[in-house]
Image 1 (cartoon, rainbow, N blue to C red):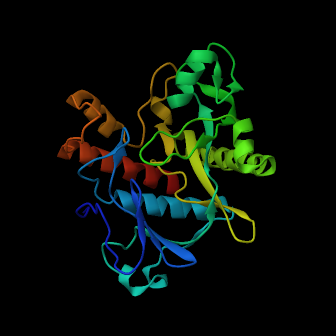
Image 2 (image 1 turned 120 degrees about the vertical axis):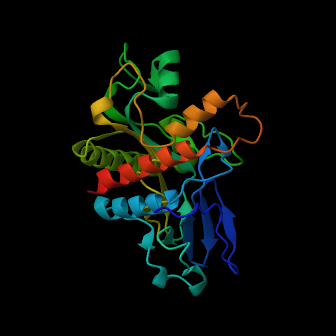
Length: 290
């Protein structure tokens, strides 16, 4: 049975930076990344969480880090590998012990289908992040080839901003931009093939990369989870409409219908929305890792 949601971890003695979902503890040359059960929508963190969501995200990221076979930051999810204050039941299964890197300040996004902010830009001008696409594409259409569409990493609750590849090259250097584009698309293609074999379409995904002191670029943060990716059931995918997804769809739909103005603190999510969201996260994990 799911436990009570963990909305915030408390580990004394270590500096902590809290994101929308994760609490990141600085252990010196390494980090402990705790995935809480917080859930966000429309740039707000909801007042109540989704039970065991953090454990699902951690387990799914650990699966992909192992399956992909690319250099990454994960050292262990075993509590025994962490300092004693982290060896508690509430943190078990939701904590990643990782290498510290200099984070590349660009979100690396790969898209295989037309959706989200890409759809809006396409309808306005026929491009996505400056990448021209064929005319006449519909919402949720499969693209002729996956495309790389970087975005800025914004702080303080602001939306990440889609940028062109040329702008990314200005920010991080041409060689780094080219390497991250190629590696991001490689991860996307291989993960999308596995997901489709499991009955799930990987519409798009956001990856983060960091640089070790040696200069090597490695995959960091979470990877290919419902929080960082758009997963659609293959059997209900119909181009021309928005498919259901394995993520926060129930949360977003309920908030849209609730009358909330998106400018003030959000209302509590009702139990049925929480339960259905938790079930979707678990289903995504079970199908992708089976």
